[in-house]
Length: 160
Image 1 (tube, rainbow, N blue to C red):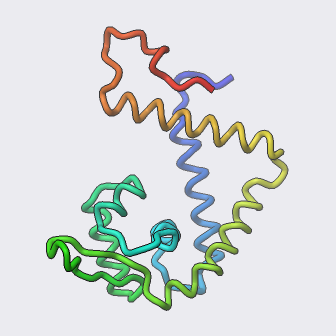
Image 2 (image 1 turned 135 degrees about the horizontal axis):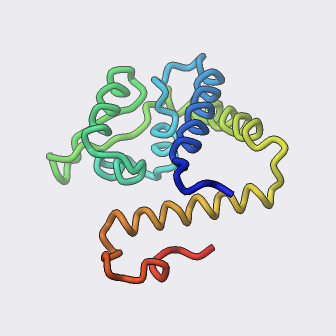
C-alpha cells in the first residue's frame, strides 16, 4: 500500500522522463525539437487549428504554446497562416515535410509503448489507464472549484 505522504507525481514524473528520453532517442534522426505530442496532435486534425485550440488539446497554457509554435515554425515543422475569417487568429498545420514523418513517429511511439508495457498484462494496463483517467478527473474537478470545503468530497470523486 502506498503511504499517503509519497508524492504520486514523483513516480509519474519519472515515468514521463524515461518515456520521453526513450522516445527522443528513437526519434533523434528527425529534428522536431522534442515536440512529438504537438506533431501527433496536429496530425489528427482534419483542418488547421488555432493556437488556443492547440493549447486546450495539449492542456498547456497559451504562452507555452506560443513559444512552441514559434520554435516549430522557425524549424519549418509547422505552417502558421492568418485566419481570413478572423485576422487576429493564426491557423496552425503541419508542413508537408513534417506530415511525411508522422508514420515514422507513430511507429516509434508504438515501439516505445511496447517497451514500456513489456511484461504487463493487457488487463493491468487497462486498469492503469482507468485509474489515471479517474485521477485526472478528480484533480480537474477539485481545481475547477466544484468541491466546496464543507461538501462530502467522496461523492464528487470518480469511482472506478
